[in-house]
Figure 1 (cartoon, rainbow, N blue to C red):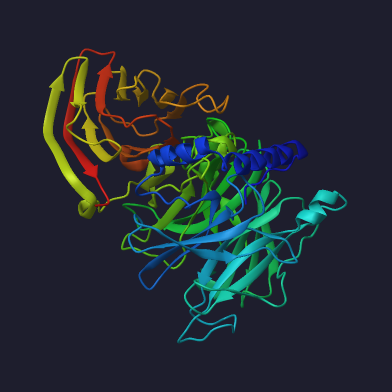
Figure 2: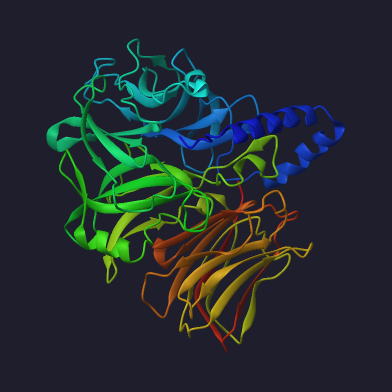
Length: 530
């Protein structure tokens, strides 16, 4: 659970909550509420109202994806945490459900995970009707505010016998007590088939602790990971450990996700990853991976500023034996002040993660969401485009870019800068692309619309190193009103960022500092829910 810890920030939150409630009673606020709907995305989940952050307890069962999330139902800023709930059958249309978990005598409900107890190891369900078990952090705000102790975060469980729609809290909570660690939270649980047991990854200060259980009710400490490796500029949180096959090989490796705030490569919040082996007790990073990380820490799940605290869905699988991931599309640097007030924050689109090995070692790759056929209202395709140093890819009125997927290949890159520019009638511009000379990608949202709500929102372009080696560049990007998700080199580098333009972008240009542009296999899908 990402949280704010200093009294100054709590005071700021109370001030913002008061003003949000106060403004909601004015006529001007009713107009702004209507206006801000222009920012609500079509295909990314947003709460109908009020605050949302970390995705929690995600699982797939009987054709339904369940997403729970950190939610303050009383204001559009961070506050007393509940578990909100939404479901989907296609990961593109979401239906918000009643709040799943409310605060109790042990505290508010911070982040956690959920599993389907198929073997009924807990005894709380049956083989015919397995219980869904949610494992979450209780945060005792009263105890924390007094400042007399640091053991105010513990781990508890709740169970559902109706496939995740209603919940009963376990009578003997907490199931993992705090040993005296200030930040002790965000349990992520999975079934470890080799030893027929459950494994829990838990954020504990600036490391990850592992626990084991045969029944989800009684847990024993196994080991810790994290000292001396990775980024430690902020608090470690929202861990996730999973096994992935290496693409094109017959080997498998374990991947550990760790979110950190602050410390991201472009400021604020971000998620790093580690590749190694897990034997049921300890996670150990490959020596080659550790050496590469020490030389240059470029092992970030997403280099954009707006993909944080993401974890994977339980009880989901595909033919490639990958995992399905979804993150919170915001950043703690400005999440409480972005220019929407009826609702705040969206989730990323769900992405399949896979592991590849190239000349740089192991890299985690994110696959861009597919299967847009049912939501495509218009298609523009062109096999080849050759132009001089600039070309207009989408002219005004030809394609609605407020929700669109664009894919193309840039070929014969010549060590110059290639810049995609989205523009609208108000002169707003969102720029992104690759600087071949610097071997890095970039996003510049400084002129993308409203930015003055935060000093750090657009203070400088976000950048990401290119790790693939090729004179061609595969690009896919998805626009959805207020977000840009770019997948470079088949997802080996990803950048996700939000923006708040005052009008939809209408044109798309590609400019270069070189002499020519060569594009192959351009496809633009205009997306619509209708």
